[in-house]
Length: 345
Ligand code: AMP
Ligand code: TRP
Image (cartoon, rainbow, N blue to C red):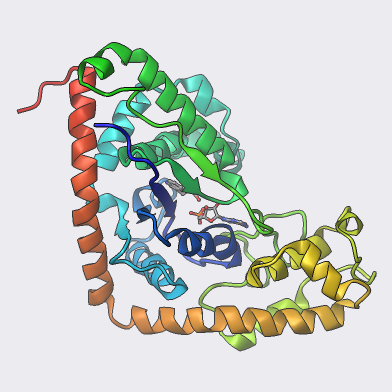
């Protein structure tokens, strides 16, 4: 069986506080990519437990990410939307890939270093092996393209290294099993647009993050209009008016961030925003940004709340998606077992 021409896969962790960075860097792009393509969007719950999660919160957050996908415009009938733990192939393939990936490769992962912090001895083994599970998510569907934010670039490079080593190590049996040009594709990251790395509203040198202690640092997808307006108005800026050219954003991380957010929300480029607001004071720019953000994000928060009132419908979507994902995943697991020499009944 030849690899499919184009297949999109991406995942979001159910760790609470879905924010504007998740939306602009990932989910909004998932929505744009679904037109005319086969897309698989996964709530990666097995990734979430690499760090402690309260069981009740985890359940709620899995449903919340699903609700966000749908509220943002992902069609769960035309695409596959499911949570990772319902398809056992993810964990199975991750084990095989743990035996392909090298310690040295994983030791270089910067996200592990950031997340483990100083107390590395006390980090879970799962947190260290997290990138091989991510490679398994992608390769289980032999996905060709993965839309993600900038912070995932290194994990996507690792995914290609793992795919390449698997294809090389098992070249003989891959060919003998009738697969031309290797078994796993060289997956391409899709990291593009004006908001691949949305920064904190309180500190332009820090990424907007779910785990930032200050809620004012991020706009949550579940925020109402008042909260959005307050956070934009309080966002850190500098005293200069906005520049008219991109060049003028250099060394002004807060201005750059707000311009990028405006551009992404209005489906334009930073240049377009500067053409309209070059020379304007932040007070005027922020007023326009509040209006835009409330117009675009307000309905998403409302729809998420409505969907969350009916958890049974969300669970039905996940279960249907998992059934359809399993069909593809099971075939890959059968192929991989044949390729590596495991006996199957
Ligand atoms: P996570 O919440 O870590 O599962 O991230 C889900 C998706 O959102 C991934 O594609 C991330 O790269 C993306 N993402 C997370 N934070 C940001 C950010 N501050 N700016 C842009 N994209 C982000
Ligand atoms: N590691 C990603 C993040 O933290 C989430 C993720 C897990 C993912 N598996 C994936 C993203 C597969 C893209 C494809 O954001």
